[in-house]
Image 1 (cartoon, rainbow, N blue to C red):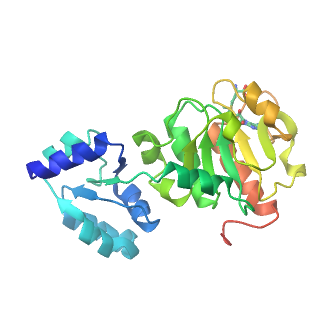
Image 2 (cartoon, helix red, strand yellow):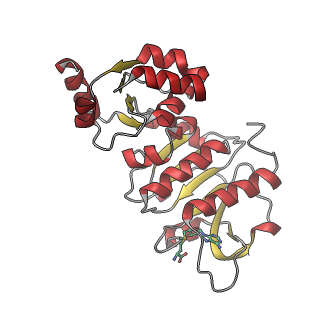
Amino acid sequence: MAVAAVREWRARAGQGAVLLDGFHAVKHAVRFGAVLPMALACDKKAVLELADQLAPDVRDALDALVVETDEAALRGLVPRLHPTGVAALAVRPDRAAQLAALAHLPRSTPVVVLDQPRNLGNAGAVIRLAAGFGATGVVTTGELDPWHPTVVRGGAGLHFATAVERMDMAELPPGPVFALDAEGEDIRDVVLPDDAVLAFGSERSGLSAELRARTDRLVSLPMRAQVSSYNLATSVGMTLFHWSSTGERRGPGQV
Ligand SMILES: C[S@@+](CC[C@H](N)C(=O)[O-])C[C@H]1O[C@@H](n2cnc3c(N)ncnc32)[C@H](O)[C@@H]1O
């Protein structure tokens, strides 16, 4: 690979470009309008064959974008190179625009809040769920960066299909807060409104006191006695499914 390309990749990565690792992440980013200044692959022909099979809608865009490079050089830039052998850098969406999208009213689909999540894989899975259900966005509080490469990988590049930002509790988007907790009222008796803020606690300690203070209704997912809790991402999936099947407007088919 040309020295200039390596230098450009490193410079962009150092300036906060989003690493898209693997075919599905690159495909989703292209499909949902991300700006991709660079994409590299060890075998461009194989990437285009994959596009022919799985995503013909993005084939031409990938053909124009992907530059073939040798595997060793690519592994030097992307240490955990995905088996599909393709990676790209994307421009991270403007924070102000994301915050505006999250704050915009009226809102026709919920915002998901993860209160101090710890596990990067869980955060990625939640972003993938939010994108699939057409949620307005995913907000995290606490230390975890929802744009960390491991989160982006877990989210299969679907960060670009919804709004994703970290923010302080005081800045949470408007809307009634429905917080999920095993001690709440049974979700099956609750209609989740389309402008709901659906909040979930951290894997270790559940909902924080600050989140509880903002909560309008505490809601539980049905669970057999003696089971302590569900996995965080699984809980988000069940809750979004409940919203989609019982909410004011049925998603995601109409999103
Ligand atoms: C792994 S659980 C946290 C368990 C934690 N030890 C606790 O004290 O809550 C992560 C989050 O998933 C959601 N969750 C898990 N099981 C749930 C249930 N049965 N009902 C409602 N929410 C649940 C809650 O938002 C919870 O804070």
